[in-house]
Image 1 (cartoon, helix red, strand yellow):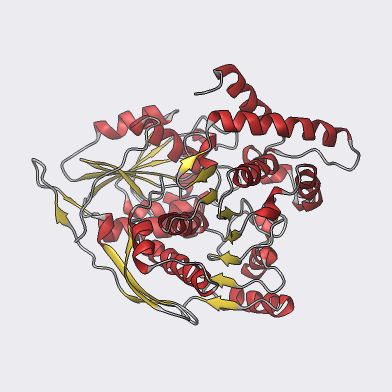
Image 2 (tube, rainbow, N blue to C red; image 1 turned 90 degrees about the vertical axis):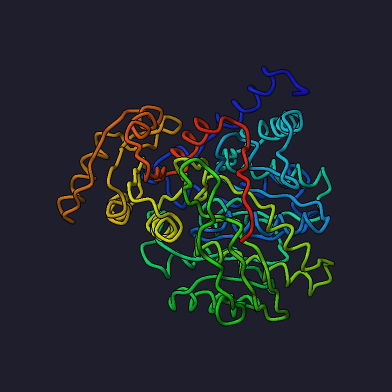
Length: 477
């Protein structure tokens, strides 16, 4: 580290000391707390760094992070200096701001925060609630870093919703809405139409829109907004699609007990875009939903090619092959299989359960589960419980929005009573204790799955892997 640990910590303390909605329940704030004018004022004070960066802007209920990472990797593989902004982080704050897969350096972070502080001190004194929040400052940091490092492209993932999100100040080359399902309903609305309209808030006049939504009511909203904005709309299974199913199956790992493990590299798809047929595209992330995300990402890249961005199919394949996206149905240990996933709503839990059923033959399944307030935990548990023989309930430590384990026990027992589920319940007060319990329950046919929240995924991933980005080696089928 080129700066002192003290200065680095002071920079983080300044950021995390701001109003931080990631650490607050939705009952504590409303849409009136999100003001794009405040973000615009902040960026104007910084010289509008976002105006100097070519951007792809991505919203959606789930899959927007994976899709963002795929697009960024393909651009980087083609030799373009590419920024990637995502949230939240899994292990460290710097994960949110990447260039060509490399995190912002601590000394770069300290320098940028020092510049920010001078601006924020002035904004804090102005009337009209112009004091920037944690996420607004983090978004501004990303724009500043990408501008200073002269990136060719920036891929910006929406934090929450779209219309009022602090990333929604750019004029992108393309807007992407991955999919729509129920999440953050207190803020975004209780219907698919309402949620879609919030996500569609990122659509700009004349800027092409690419979407993986499938519900008729969601497509209708997108079509309406795109007509109003005169923005071309490209929809999954109408304008672009996946033509070839991946090869599924297992390869035999050379271990003492000859266990079977899924090979993430064995998924290969063929994509028909409005302009090309692109085949043999590898998808290294597990799950059918990732094939949809990949189809969307490849189509966006092919659109950029039509706009004159030089990029070969082989470079797209190279980027997709080297993609790593931690804690998204991630196999962090093979013997026994340990899967960590950030699923935290009904749709993402369904995708996890489907992937486990398709990819892992183990029959003794152990779930480590913790959740966040304001989520539909009952719906999550109804989907999860039938797939696990043992459920270890716990609570993470890193965020005050956690559901206390005692409350989680009541929710789980209520679900079991209403559904007739007989999974064995176990209770612990920390992720470490949950992990130790799970290890004590191992049998030759065991699988351990950690899910329910970004925060439980982050804490147990760090426990198992440390802060290193360990990569599992796999071979194509």
